[in-house]
Amino acid sequence: GFDTVFINSDAKVKMSGIELLLRTSFTDALAVDASYMYSRERNAGSDTQLANRPKNSGKLGLTWEQPGMPFGASLALKYGGSTYASFQSASNTPTTEVYGDDVIANLGVQWYPDPMSRHHRVSLRVENLLDTGYVTRIRSTRLTGSPPPTRLVYRNLGAPRTGYLNYTYQF
Image (cartoon, rainbow, N blue to C red; front, top):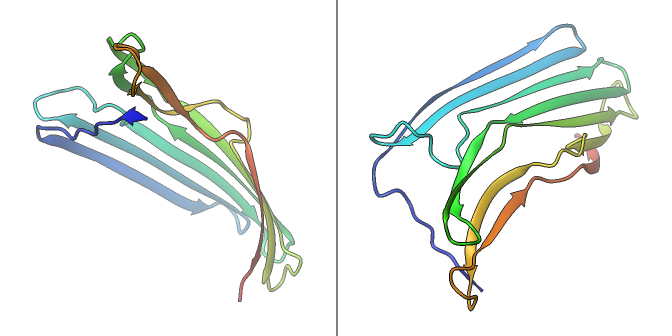
């Protein structure tokens, strides 16, 4: 088993930030969605960003759907900002490792067998289109029964390229 301890901050945490959203259409068929978030999260009295909390993140999406046409498509680029993890290394020494700063592309296509009423939709979505390897979290733990100071360092990896095929009926 694992010995797991979750600790909240003993001190006050200061958080501030801003989120900007833009949604507009260039034509009847082409639209863009953009978002950006800045988030400053730190312990009171410190200028250091909290671990596992990126200061910057964002998304840019383009959608093409011509009214009355049987097809549509979308492309989204998601940015997960740089952050860091502080943990005990395999030899039980304090360690800090930077991760993040990734851009992940998602692509979707839609087919409407009945383009005028659009009650039926078949869609194919591919997430992580370029099969980018990325880490979402870094942690360490001591396995119960292992000799001290041995620790297991592990990384939660983002999903690999994944495809979804959906059928939707809209009443």
